[in-house]
Image (cartoon, rainbow, N blue to C red):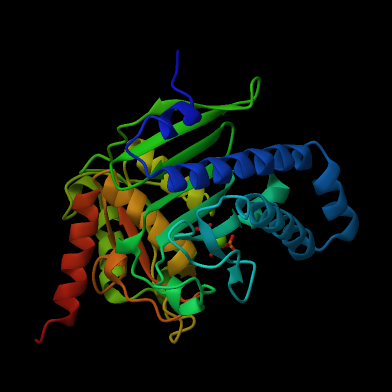
Amino acid sequence: MAVTLDQHLSAGGIEPGLARLLAVVADACADISALVRRGAAGEILGALESENVQGEVQKKLDVISNDLLIEACAKAPALAGMASEEMDTIHPVRPVSAEARYLLLFDPLDGSSNIDVNVSIGTIFSVLPVAADAPREATEADFLQPGRNQAAAGYVVYGPQTTLVFTTGQGVSAFTLDPKTDQWLQVTDAVAIPRETKEFAINASNMRHWAPPVRGYIEDCLAGETGPRGKNFNMRWVASMVADVHRIVMRGGVFLYPWDAREPNRAGKLRLMYEANPMAFVIEQAGGASFDGFGPTLDAKPTGLHQRVSVMLGSAAEVERLQALHEKALAPA
Ligand code: AHM
Ligand code: MG
């Protein structure tokens, strides 16, 4: 018999307040999964077709998922506040106290441009600790902690199966949602990303805008077995970070959404606090690595809730190679 998420969370080893919070997040994601599937059956996609404005309906589902998470997670006694891709400012829940000692950040529906074409999408979440000498409301400054501080992080991919993957800093566990019983059943509690890979994920349509180290890295991969890498590479790009990262978590690979010259003042497309950091925590805990163009993603010092960042993560050997190429480019001639 497979271990259920409830059994896993109550087995000890995870602080009880955090365990309860993770259970609540998982329940909310099970509800989002049901909502996503109803969309595929016509209720949500139908509205999209009638309006013919993809952005509006995607936004509608983004907002519904956001509201669902906000309402469900507020019930977790250990939660002092939330922040989301869908909200400009933070959402305090209850005063920070010895009990209410966590903050939750999430992207409620990542890859939402894929909903109307029935391609995998997901939810990404990050849990940070917070403390106070006397009860007080959480502030935005409380959220601006390096990813290294995360108490837990993970994602749910709404694909052919709904799968939850998370870490509390003691390795990575994966659970699949059984649609017959609505229970999360453990797939593994020892996710391990192979160090070596022959697969990369990047939106190659941006190639002409990439910085030299990224361009050089991909050119070497594309050169195949007669090139400097001496092996042929495969490429995948789902355009849902959750789906691309999940593939890497399961079989290795490297994911890149780097800075590019389209908008030189923008650090990247993806967000540090609720996309890059939680994924970097999962990837590192599974034996992979993550790099933001300067150093490990988890060491970046955040300056804003919605700040963007360059993302390179996955199999350690590839991330180390990318880091070396960046260091070489910066080195004095
Ligand atoms: P979103 O949070 O608005 O859904 O955007 C993030 C998504 C990622 O899931 C994905 O990796 C990326 O955007 C795809 O971007 P592009 O369409 O430029 O390839
Ligand atoms: Mg997103």
